[in-house]
Length: 106
Ligand code: FES
Image 1 (cartoon, rainbow, N blue to C red):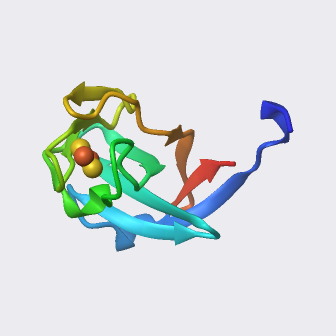
Image 2 (cartoon, rainbow, N blue to C red):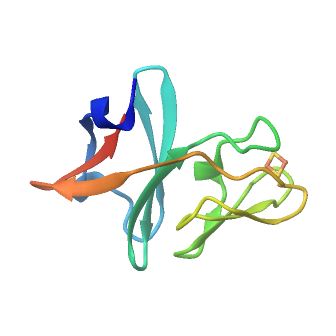
């Protein structure tokens, strides 16, 4: 599959997001984290890249999500790991809002 073959898929209605926080969503077999950040909406895989923690259980300050297990830190704008022990970036999805729905390209 090429990038051209990817399609926009509904994830969650904007009105169902936790305002200013992260919201867990299951899409097929994927556990996603939808972040209502200060500058927009971002979607990543929910599992921390360091271990078996769901990032939606962590603290979100509007840009950075802190893992609830070992306090690794990720920038949701880029997915970049910003604090140890997290070293591997989050898998982020191309995200848009269309007709009140958060959509990702998969
Ligand atoms: S499981 Fe997230 S930092 Fe360790």
